[in-house]
Length: 316
Image (cartoon, rainbow, N blue to C red):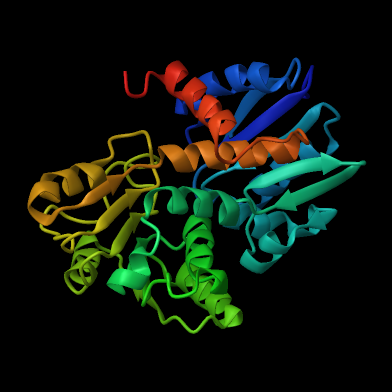
């Protein structure tokens, strides 16, 4: 981490150099009129040492030309290690004890959790309106990190009325993350049953899927298929009839999506990758860091998405 020589936007992740954002951001910056701004990545291993997270936060906070950062994979760990270093923590970040966005305003260093907004925008873009009210289906999310906390928060909001899942199931390979998620949902008091399942092996997730009802939303929120190879389920897993299979990843080997596609014709699956989530996730953080007004829907948003698709060759 060398001091920035011009206005710089940082990406804190695991394999940042492989992300499409490194090619997309310069085009977005021109389109949005952000000025002469650079983008650089910081790669940390998952669940890195607390002192490494504090080193990163200290650098970003003190470096004059570092405008802010998007955080992925490390949202919970970075917050836990460095929460005392932020001048301000937004309500979502305080509730969920995670951060996906670091920014500066009036000399203050701010921490935000943008996933509740970006995941909600993504979900509402592909889950048919009234789906849960009509099917009374569950949500099963594999991985108990910040993304699952955020998207399950969104799906339990009282404003959704009857269009909420009948049950939320979350699996994870370690117990601590499950305990954290369970505590957050208890504090929300939304009345929807939340079941946390320790699943150290893919076959454990297969067993959970076998008990899901038709129309369930099944999510790979583990990072497997992008940050690490593989899938959280085995090839023997069976998706519920009419399920929606959503992988939060949009790049990598995407084994989970291949498994879903193999069953799609017989089981009438709707299959979604993480592309729209990627667009919303980045634009929400860019808007915060650069104090920019970026639309979340409509023709102006479609142009932003089209720029990303053109740069990456998506759909070509």
